[in-house]
Length: 397
Length: 143
Image (tube, rainbow over all chains, first blue to last red; front, side, top):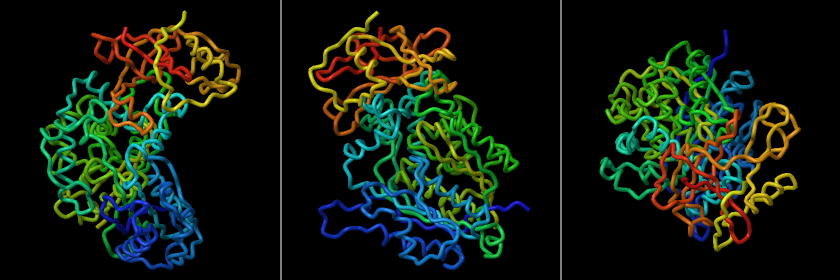
C-alpha cells in the first residue's frame, strides 16, 4: 500500500510582536522559542525524540542573527537525523514548502517522523524599511521595484480588476475582514482579536487602493512546529490526526505578471493545483468542510474561493458578504482569523494554517470548531498566486 | 515615433541596474524610444527585454519598436511606500495591455495622472517617459 502522511502534533506561539529592537538590553532569542515549541509539539504528538529522522526549517528572516539555524536547532535538541536536515525558502510559499518537504521525507521512507518548523521575526523592523527588502521579492528588481511596486500592490490591482469585471464592492471585501476578525476573536493564537465592524473597515486609511488598513496584513512575528508521521505511526499513537489525502502544485510560468495577457484574477495556478489535490483525494470541491487559505489581503481570499471551486467567477465576493464563508456558513474559510487578523508572520504563515487545520480535523478548535469537520484544504502561494501548493486533509479520530 | 518626455526634478528613488544587454533599452528610453526584444523565431515580444525567448528558448532576439498605445488593465495607488519612495507617495502603478499586433504584450509601469481623466480599468492609455535627473523611467498615462 502507498505510504501516507499525517499531522500528529502541533505547537505555536501567539502571532504578534516578539522581535526585540537591536538597542534593547534584553533580546528575544529564536532558539529559546524554537526548542520549547519542538518539545511541546512532540509531546502533543505522543512520539519520542528518537523517532524524529528529519527536520525541515523555514528560512529565518535576515534579521535573525544566527545563520544556518536548522543545524543550530538540531544541536540544541541533540537530534540524530538520518533523513534530512535543511531549511527551505519559497518566498510566501516558504512554510508550505517546509510542510511539503517534510511530508516527502516520510513518503520517501527516509523517516517515520519528521518536523516542519520555523520562526519569523521582523515586526520590530519599521514597515518602510522592511519594504525595501520585500519590494525586491515581487516583479523584476530593475523594472518593477524601480517603479515603486510592492508585494501587496499586485493584490490591490487584482481587486481593482475584479471590481471592474464583476461589480464587486469594497463592502464585500470588507465583509471578509470583519468575518476573519470574528474568527480571530475566538483564536488564542491570533494577533488581532478585538471585533470590528464594516464601517470601521471602510473608514481605515488607504494602503494600496482600493484596499485599506484592515484589508491588508499587519506586521507579525511567529513561530510554530508541526510533527508529521507515517500513517502507521499515526495510527499507533491512539490520538486523532489529520491525514494528507491529496496534494497539488502548479507554477503558471510567470513571475508576478503574465506578459501574455490573461485573466489575472482567475489564479490559474490555484485552480490547477486544487484540481490535482481533489483528484488525488478522490473528492470534489463540494466535499470540503473547512479551508485555510494563504490569502494576504481580503480580495485574495475571495479570488481563491473561486479558483478552488467553492464559488463561480464573480460569486465569491457576494458569497462572503452573505456569510457563506463564516463559521456556521456553507464553507467556513480562515477559521483561524486568516492573514489579516490571525496574523501574517510571512515565512511561517502556512505553518499556522496547518496548525489550524489540524485543530479543526482533530476536533479541538474550541469555539472555532466547524461541526463534524471531516475534509479540509489548505493553500500556499507565491507572487500573485503565480504558484500554488494545495493540500487536502482528512480527519481521523 | 517617440514617447512624450516628462521632466521630473529629482533623481530616481531606486535606479535600475543596466547591463550590456539592456543598455540599448535604457539609452533609447532616455531619448523617448520605446523598444523591447522580439523573438526572431516565434515572433513574440517580451518585456522586460531578455536575451533568450522565454516562450521558444531561441537566443535570436531583436530590438523592435512598439506602438505607444494600450489599454489600462488594472491599477492601484500606493500610499504605504518603501523608504526610498516615501516622499513620492502616494503614487500610482498599473498593468497595461499593449497593442502589439498578433502577439499582445502586457507590461507593468508607473501610472501618471492626467487632469480630468480619473483612472479606470479599460481606459486607453499611452506610454510616456518620466525624465528624472539621473535617467528615464517608463510610465503610462490616460489618453
